Length: 513
Ligand SMILES: [Zn+2]
Image (tube, rainbow, N blue to C red; front, side):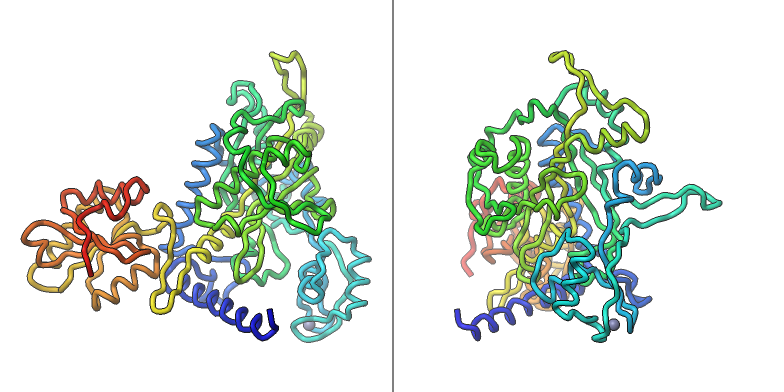
């Protein structure tokens, strides 16, 4: 490809992203927090449309990783005492390397700065090496061009105090997982003392990022969905492995140049991934992302190098999604945490966290396989991949189940009793638990455009014929095709359409435009 062609393409893409963000803010999906006080980087609000979309993504995760897996789900505090993070290793290891500009005082995360300026991935490199790279590449302050100071460690947990007096130190949790590990003894009993068993937690996590500059891709407060699967290291198998053993994954192994397509089963058998549970949850992760509307070719798995891995992990595969704006971004990490967490909590608390396997007559410390998802990043990927701009029409082709609003009702004209009839249809659907809005302003074309822009799958129009025979038109967002259906059938027809149980053409009598 010629250089000029690349430049043109990049321009088009970045304007697409800008269009999408303009839409997301204007229509109430997301916006930067605390705007009236100048904003604080790394915080986003979910608006009236973003909140239901996010909740539906979470619900889909729950269907896959909690209900589908028979996992237990808990909800523990987001503030935790210091002891937990001493044991978990976060006090010692949850650090980023930073540097400050000697002239303007701005702080920067070194790995990001180096990547931006040189393209090098230096995640996990020691301090001295990074200082050398900064000198060699003459990297200066991106804000003012000033000289950068020495490189030092910054613990990215938010610190707080519990109660008055300031004696009891606490931290906002950097992951939900620790809440599960500290409850292990009770959860083992809840799981009827059988392995493997999974415990999920969905909730806020916090990371005091040094200088987040990538919008909602790098947040200081975020929503995570994590599953800790406890298993016997001598039997790391999954009872439903065969369900997805033949699924193909794009795998980029650590230290390899090439990305290969490989079936899950083959990856396990060849030892490309550490065990069957790892393979299974990578396969399930891919299925989950596809279910949200991420095209298969934009999903890959990248193995972290030893330097990149978190302190608790023996093997980690990141699920990455390709985005136009940010390139490939990590949306989930599947980590083999071994017995690290349970052993450490046992040592620090003096509680015995081993379990006795009756059938095997053995006492073990459970090992843990952890799929961990960043819901906010997934939210962004879902929005970006659903945004369509084909010449004259802009719309969000969100999966119908994910759409924040199910249906929009409008009267063709604001007279002849049509608004009154439309209001009764709106009320009928609202009572039947649809997320439904009523829109009577502007031309019918404008109303369709407004509904398309926020991804409403179906629009119902009330016209003069409705008054005669109680029929309405239903319009499909993606194809703009229309069918005519009776008001009586409308709730069940819409429910079947939204569940994907009914083809649009079969939802009524087709209309030719
Ligand atoms: Zn500076």
